[in-house]
Image 1 (cartoon, rainbow, N blue to C red):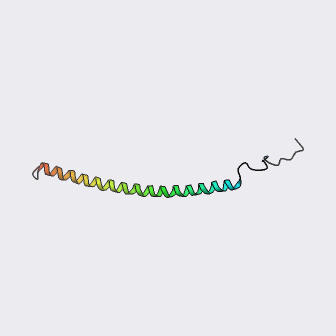
Image 2 (cartoon, rainbow, N blue to C red):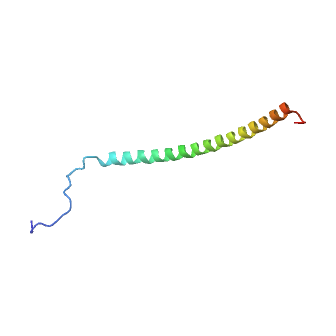
Image 3 (cartoon, helix red, strand yellow):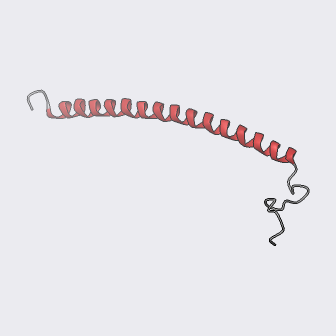
Length: 77
């Protein structure tokens, strides 16, 4: 063992996964990341719109409650 030089890890002559398969999988993963990013941006925009609609509906319901309360108690209370 003393006379042997360390040449690094012993690797098989051919990788078990062909390089073109690795490149293809890498491209697919990159596309998936891009699509996920686009979906997250769309989901964020949709959430903003839903939150705005919720606020609008809440304001309208509060106003409706106020009007109904005034109409049942009358102007003199």
